[in-house]
Length: 142
Image (tube, rainbow, N blue to C red):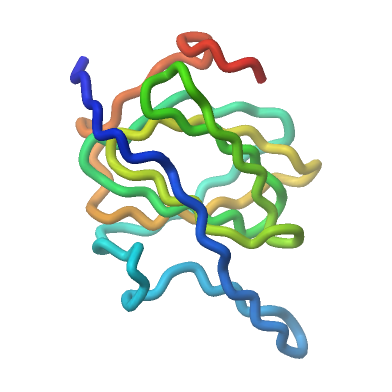
């Protein structure tokens, strides 16, 4: 296991929601934003109500997480001992959670319907560059 101590915590950016007839436009990320550090891949994942997806950290990529539907609780940690919690829902607080390389995170579905999360990575997804831990390996109480 690689011991990374990047020391950069997660950050939250309020996002623009444009009200238009027939359905809103939800802006996720622009190339001219100071937080944009590159593009490698974008993908969506879903999470069902009550499910917790275990701890993971990207060793080389910054993740930009945007909840497009439903509600999700994200927990982040630099060291596995101190934790930050973010509850994100596009209806209540349309935000982008940016997790720098080396930042641990796990997440839980909070809405009755499956939540949809868009992840915009700064480089291509590489399974060899992701470290994982079981949910009980950190002392966070869900």
